[in-house]
Image (cartoon, rainbow, N blue to C red; front, side):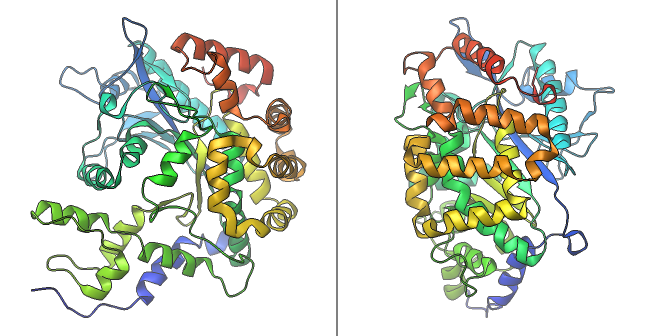
Length: 466
């Protein structure tokens, strides 16, 4: 018999969403920064082709095994698995090292008061990880997507229930969900919301910036050992893997007082399919159904309740380009190369943490608010050439902001990136496509390219990975 217990109405669900849009009320002036950088550990095979590695294995040669062995003592990393057994290493500053389903390593920094501290902390621990892995001839690929290997060659390396359920669900929708889990790499930038008025503006501006940041920093033209025709194939994957839980949950006149970010995100979340219901049906031998949370509330379920625990888990499985988590989690940026990885961090922070720059971005981009999905599609395919003048204007706004002047060396590095690429209608993917005449580059070619790029862009010393 179908469970028809009265539901608790939408207000508690909305109240929880509201908490995601509000930071610490006592710290409205905070301008902290957190970074999440994903990297791909690889070995070079006998034929010089890249090979992925298990996270852990019985022989003790998995990536986690190596890190546990070589980062003990006074390194600043301590093995500290989560309550559910998920492997994790914690840093002395409060950051952590975790693993993604395709074996990607992610370093998540602590909440840092300045951009230089966030960058320095990330470099410190990525260097520690890199040195540890090099002892076993394992190296880290910095990029937006594994360019060499297929979904089947990589496999699902993290097999905890959450990832198994996601894998089964995404596979039912098409090929892109599994590509996302196994192949993609990103740089996420986490910024404070500020007071309610500022939070609203930063939320809207962040979403407006998504296509532009994709265009400027696209860095994934290859996938599964083939050219894709995209400057950011990673973005294309995310746009097409499950449109009910990814993308941009805002449309229309963003500056209308009738539009509230909490209500936008509530509607987005209610209309997304519930992965746990799909998984439950499969486990019970039923035909897997795509049921939204809104439908679940309305119709009930023979086994599962749409309660607050289910709601919070559902929210954790939404992956829009910008995600509210008590702070802004900006998720659009392709994993960058070692040389210029700090540039998108500086650009985004310089815009959102400067009142004048924030207002300029809203004025410049709000007329395009109904066209963001189409703009993102064009940006992923064509890069800066999709809308070159807009990309240049956005970059110049960031370069001229007062926040950018808080770190002159990093600001100068951003300007070198701008002059080398954006101002010339190019992005990093255009450079990657030239390494091997439009074909997938070899490991040696890529490493040589990175060294040459470093010499041209001359990044500040504290941003450099060893």
